Amino acid sequence: MPADIPVKTTSRLLATPGPCDYDAGMSSSETTRVTGRHYATGGGVQVDISGGRIDAVLALSDRSAADPSLPWIAPGFIDIQSNGYGGQEFSSPELTVDDVVQIVSQQAAFGVTQFCPTVTTASFETIGHGLATIDQAARQSKSIDYTIAGIHLEGPYIASEDGPRGAHPLEHCRPPNWDEFQRFQQAAGGRIRIVTLSPEYPKAIEFIARAAASGVVVAIGHTAADSAQIRAAVDAGATLSTHLGNGAHRMLRRHPNYLWDQLSDDRLLASLIVDGHHLPPEVVQTIVRAKTSSRVILISDLSGLAGKPPGRYATQLCDLEILPDGRLVIAGQDQLLAGASQPIGVGVANVMRFAGVDLPTAVHMASHHPARLLDRREISLAAGDSADMVLFNLRPAAGGRATHLDVVATITGGRLAKFGCP
Image (cartoon, rainbow, N blue to C red; front, side, top):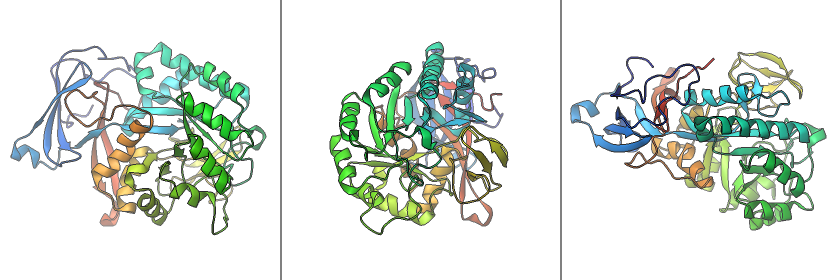
C-alpha cells in the first residue's frame, strides 16, 4: 500500500496482506480510520471501520476537506459480468481452483468488492466444470465466498444466428432446458444468480417463469427474439437486458426490433459496457435518457484475455486480438468485438462524460443498482454498512475532455485487498 494513501490503522485490519492472502483481517475487531472525499457530498470524511463494518462517518475540518489530494471514497463496485482475467476464462475445461483465486484476487485492483464470475456458452461438461470449480473455490475460502456475489451463466440458451450470437460458439448454442439448468445449478452449489438467454425458443417462456420463481435473475441477451417474445419474457419474469446494444445483428430493421422493445420496457434494467468501444457515446447517452439512470447497471464484461498486452492470441473459440487502443476483436479485422478488456471503473468515468451524469449517479450504476438486482443491501457509507469501499482519484486525459478513474485502494469486508497478486 503506497505511503500516501490516507489510511490510518490501529491494528492489522488493513495491514497489507501477503500475495493473495484474502483472509487477512476478516475477524479483526480493532478500529481503522480512512479519510477522503465523500463521493456524494464532496466533503472530507473520516470513516471508522471495525469488525468488517463501518462504525462511524465523521466530517473532517474545513481545512482537511479542502485538500485536493484526498481520494474519493465510494461504495465498492459490484460487477455482475466478468468472464475471467489474465489469460484465463471461467468457461474452460482447464479451470482450477487456483485460477479462480487469482481472478478473484485481481478484482480489488478494479475497485470491485463483489462480482459475478461469468460462465459462457460451451459444452455441458465445460460449463459444469467451470461452475463446480468456482463453487469449490468459494467453499474453501470465506473471503472468496464473500467476493463472489453469485455466478452469471451467459448462455448456452442464446440465439444461434450470426450477430446476436456474438463470439459464442455456434455448436453449443441451444434452446433452454430446465433439467439441464438444474444440473448446472447443482454443479454450482446453487450459486447461479443470473442467467442470460434468448426468449425466441418455443419453451423459453416456461423456462423463464421457473427460473425467476427459483430466485434466479433472468436476463435477455444475445437474442433475435421478436416483439411478442420479448414482451412474453418480461411478463414471465425477465428483469434485465444483458449488455444492451451489443450481441446484436449488425443491420436491424428500423422498427420494430428487439433493441426498441427492451429499451422501452420499464420493467427491464439494462446493463451496459461503457468502455468506449462497445457503444458510441451517443448511444450510451440515449439509453441512459430512455431507461433513466436508475435502470442502468454498468458492467465490465471482462474477457479472460483482459490484462494481457496487445497482440494476437489463440483461444478455444478462434484467434483473438487485443488492439493497441484496448479493443478485443476477432483477429484479422477491427470491428467485430469479442469481449472487453477494460475494468468497470472505466465505465464509471466514461458514463459521466458520455451521458452527462454526475459522480454519485455513475457510482450508483456500478454499486447500488447491481446490489438491488441481486437483492443485496446497498452500501451508502453509513454506520452499520459493510465496509466495502473503493478509494479512487479522477483525472482528466489529454485536452481535459475525458476523465480517468484511478483506483487507490479497495476495502472488502473491512480488509484491504492487495493489488497485483501474481
